[in-house]
Image (cartoon, rainbow, N blue to C red; front, side, top):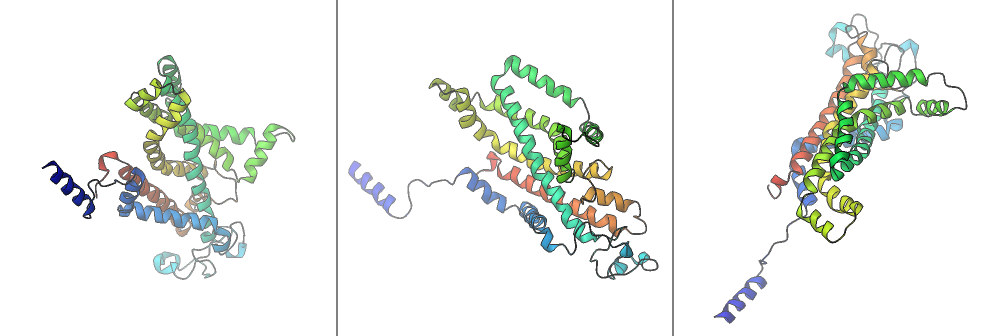
Length: 342
C-alpha cells in the first residue's frame, strides 16, 4: 500500500502539474497589480511624457524660453479666437506662437515646456531630501526608543507647531534678503552664485527640505517601532547582529514600501508649494520659467488674455493629477493584504 502511494505521488509529480507552485516575488506581484490599475498607468505615462519634454526641451520648444519679441506681445494664434471669441476684436493674430505670446512677446508653449523642468525637479529632489532626513531621523528615534525617542520627537512636535507654508515663506524671504547682496569672496556669495546658476532653485530645495521631512520622520518612527519587535529582528539580535546590520538588513527593507508610497503621494504638495512660491515672487529667478510665475503674470490680464493663465494652470494640474494617480496605484499595489489577488 505504501509503495503504491509513493508510485502515485511520483507519477503525479511527473505528470505535468507540480506538487508545489512557486510564488512570484513581492515586487513582481506588485508591479503586475500596478499595471492592472488604469489610472496609475495613465499617470505614469503622463509623467514619462513630461520627463521626455523636460529633457528634450531645447529640441522640442519652438523658441528659447527667454527670447523676447516686443512687437508680438500678447499675440494669439487664429484657433484661439474660436475658443475665446471675445478676444477676436482686440487681440493681434500671429500663428507663429501655437499658444500665444506673453506680455513681453515670449512664446508661451516654449515657456510651458521649460517650466516642466522646474516642477519635475522639485518632484524628484523634494522626496529625496525628505527621505534622507526623515528616514534617518525617524529610524534613530524608533530604533533606540526611550529617552532618545522622546527628545527627538518632541523637537518634531515643535516644528509641527508652525504652519509649514508660512514657515517656508519666512525661510524663502530670509534667504532672498540675506543672499541678495553678498560680499564677493564670502560663503554667502558662493551660495548666491550657485543659486543664480540653478535659476533660484537652490533655496527652494532648502526650504522644502527643511519643512517636508517631519511627516516622513513620524511615519518612519512608527514603522520602525512596529518592525523592531518582529521575530526575525529578535533572532538577529540573538545571533549577535550589530545595530547597523539589523537596521539596514532587517528593518529598512521591510518598511521601504510604505515610505515610498507616502513620498509619492506627497509629490503634488511639493509641486504646489514651488508653484505658490513662484506665484508670490519667492520662487525661481526671472526669466527662468515656472508655471506658478506664469500663472501670476497671466492673472494680471486674465480677463483680456485668459490663455496666459489657463495653459500653465492646465500643465500644473495635469502633472499633479498624474502623480496622484501613480501614488494611489503604488499604494494599492504594495498593499500586502492584496498580494496574490487579480
